[in-house]
Length: 531
Image (cartoon, rainbow, N blue to C red; front, side):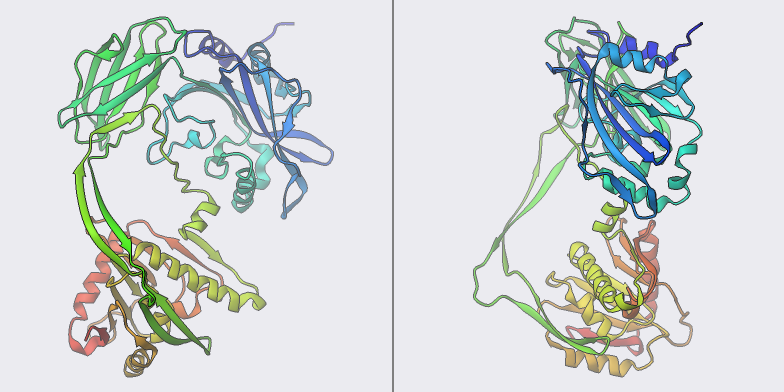
């Protein structure tokens, strides 16, 4: 019987040969799998990494999760994570027939796949910003980058239960991240796939931005590597247009002539002419050009400055002392730095699509309390707003809400702990008793320490009503950060709504400023401090 081999198998066999990309000794294999009663385990994701270590191959596998992973809405499913090591020959033997058999038993236990197809090899550089999708699945791709041969699940038919209800995929991803830095929810198109990762380890390189004009590159070869001609390529693209493209021969581990320094972030590649492969590549490089630093010394004081507020939440009186750390600014320093990008520079990843991370940053928080949870949920939502105000409101914070009352302001915006931050607030058609709002602020703000605040009313002839509720952190560099509250401050957390960070924040800030300027007449002023 004729055997048909995966086209990816030949590629992998070439890439793992000694002295091509490295000197590999084995594969580490991580299987994320799903089980259901009466059905053989199915592959959720398998990552197979070529490694170079004096690792003793252990025939036994281990489960990274001690207890089965379960999701509430999928009570008949359990998930697990298995990890083990195999020789290079064993790994090759498994992948060479995978596209025909859809069967995998490297760990000794069968794992089923749907129809897989090998896609051409890809080179995945280390992360910069924004992070690359595949780096959310690969292992430690911090250095030169990795070649990836991927076997793609074309149907995803095993995962209808996850793809039709993305919240379940987010929950599963969160559970997996307790054991592995794999962000499955944000790369859902890879469900059911096998990824074979071959890190490029022949060279270690450094790029230095040593002055305003040059970008030299030097490198070291792997101790076992044979010398070969390498080429350094530097390319700059802006708005999908290639603005520069330079190529230099690397001789004696250095390029003879440095790349020209570019204003925009360049991409650098190291090309192996002998093997017709990349030995390294970067994402867009960003160099630190200067650092501004302030040395702040905390002053020991028996009396810590504080702003004293008395207000109410749902009819219950609250008394809060907003404390300000007493600091003394002693020195401000600005210095131009020698700039360096090295192969050992690890850029922290930003997980923008994972629910837990978005929730921790309050960039996406969903409130859907049951009737008995409403009071607690309301307090939690107010605390989330206060957290944002103190996290991002060092210079300024503006609140825009048609139903924004004095109580709402004292429960949120006025709890900004940054001394003399510029605080602005606009209310609208939901507030009719403006004199009473001013009176409540006079009574409630017992000590206005560090306060710089103005409160205006957007109601009157020629003033359009508005509906949306925004928390705005203005910026001088046209990158304002803005959150949509999803509900008025007086009702946040009380019903189903979403607090989320919005794109195009600068446009919302511009709209606020336009309305604020319309309200510059004294008839719109409710309260101001200093007077």
